[in-house]
Length: 160
Image (cartoon, rainbow, N blue to C red; front, side, top):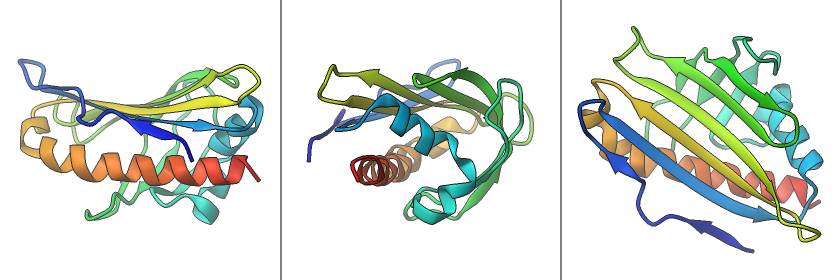
C-alpha cells in the first residue's frame, strides 16, 4: 500500500486567515474508475467514512449536499457549489458557512495519471475566514484524518 501525505498542512494564518490541508494516495487503477467513484455521490453512504452522504448532480454551477463526519468532530452538512468539473481530472466545490468570509472552504480532488502504474489522487481543502485561526488545529488533525480515511476507501474500491 503506497500512501503519502505531507507531515504538516501548509498553514498560513495571515490577514486572509487561510489554512490548506493536502493529502495524496497512489491508486493502481485508471483515472476513469477513480473519477466514477468520486462523482457517484449517491453511493457515498455505502463506502465513504468521511463524506458519509452526498446528493446532487456533478455539474459546474450546481449545488450539492454533503454530510461530513470528520473523526473526532460532530457531523456537519454543507451545500457547496461545484466550481470545477474536468472529467477524469479535477472536481472542486466551494462552500460558505453562515456568511462569506466567516468560514469558507474549497474542496478539490485532482487525479494525476502515473502512466501505466495508475493514478495519484490528491484531496485538498483550502479554508479562508475569520474563524480559521480558532479552528486550525482541529481542522488540521481531524479533517486530515478524514481525508486519509476517504483516500484509503477510494483506493480499496478502485483496486477491486
